[in-house]
Length: 127
Image (tube, rainbow, N blue to C red):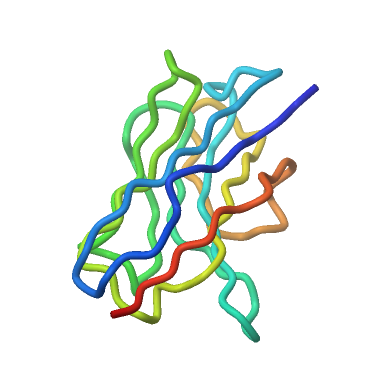
């Protein structure tokens, strides 16, 4: 059974940090590009950051560049999102998702490309 499980969310003060994890089971994460999306209350889901199948080449939304870093550990079948300098506007449910891509394709933050999704983890940035 293919499954993606996000963890690491929680309540943090503005300026703080969190690291989200996306663990895959039932399939090999290394065959997929992986992305993080988020959805805030009353807003549409938006792409945050994605990473290609091999290497560390990533694509991130302008709103998180310089603050969020996506990385992957294929040996652990896990992708991470390190979030620093968090702002109240980062409050959302964060989802990871995977896309079938060719080996060296760059990833895109277009959710229609993504086939499997996790259930999400809540991130709340508030004082």
